[in-house]
Length: 210
Picture 1 (tube, rainbow, N blue to C red):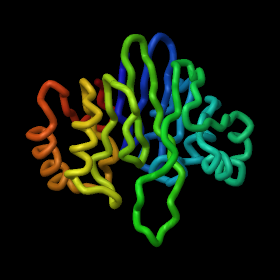
Picture 2 (cartoon, rainbow, N blue to C red):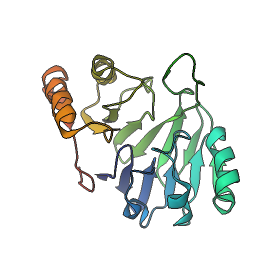
Picture 3 (cartoon, rainbow, N blue to C red):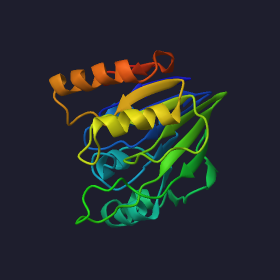
Picture 4 (tube, one colour):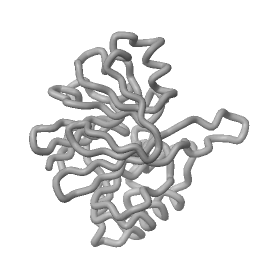
């Protein structure tokens, strides 16, 4: 299995000929989708969903109803290859995937409470969890957690506790474009000290592999 970080919240997972890309958004390099066999979108915010990137390839898209509605309006050709999935639904995206959870973390009580799906992805004997913009757990043990590490809807203590509670063997930082380098270093120091060392917290540079 090969995991590559591509800009902010986007990860690319390659295993046994399948190439699954999660959350290619406005901060994502176009090459993230080269050869993609499927794309998963957690929610409609532009840092996770870019219609222009989806239009640049022909991979099937799996996502929630709110995103499918945005695709229908903004990228109708992509809508023809879009499948709507719901909480608890398992599907074949080249790799086995299960959609889990339903809501984005609360940004502010006066703002809409957006829909959001996390995805459990199985690659061989490894299970990976991308939560999108939420701190709702996967409900089962996982080997790799993609951990949001900066967001206007979360404190660093909440993010670290989410990683601890999930208990993944590896914790990979995502959702990090809005931090300065100095801010990222502060969080990484905290995470390195507070997430058990055996769980392997790591921040990958854009385009770097795990």
